[in-house]
Image 1 (tube, one colour):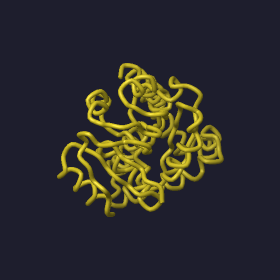
Image 2 (cartoon, helix red, strand yellow; image 1 turned 45 degrees about the vertical axis):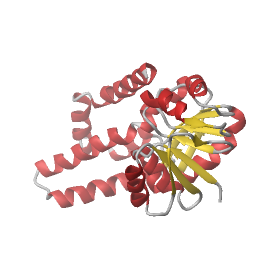
Image 3 (cartoon, helix red, strand yellow; image 1 turned 180 degrees about the vertical axis):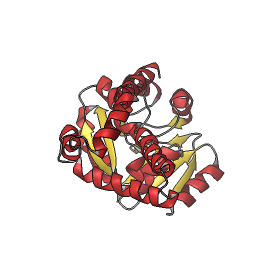
Length: 252
């Protein structure tokens, strides 16, 4: 099996490693051996662990998952020249990564939290000659989509990368609404989870507008609830969420 070298050991790195651990050899590099050991424990498989100072990246495939603010510091601690750097950092350009890391190529990627269960929606862009390499690695944790520009990737970050948080808010709110009307909490959560599981399959083949029209009969319960959502500005707020996320990505 090929080896993937994780630079950084945070939550996103762990989620991706969980999706890759049965298909790749994992090694992880960080600043604190205790945190690296915790990463290994949470991953549930044996990994090679290294402290970052003077770690040799020569000819390796790197998966960078540190904080954007730490790019310069981390790059200075490494030695050698890597084959390719796959970055999951929001808003951090290919140019900036090449400035601080000694690598042959850079591919920016944006997985999401579902990587840990093999269902990430990962968008990518960068050095196109490494497109297949990136698709092979990130395809092990879900679907991938290659985009033509970094601007498109930053927009997609607000949709797929941040999307699980938005959907989690909606899921929690819907369940709370059922509890407010008298449904038991455990039952409400089970119904909500079943709703999202089924919806996830339907949306693969049916346009959202058609799904909505199929459910909403004239003067019915769905129409009443849908009207409440529109009155509450849910549609506009979702559109604004993507806009604000994209604006933040540009700031980074």
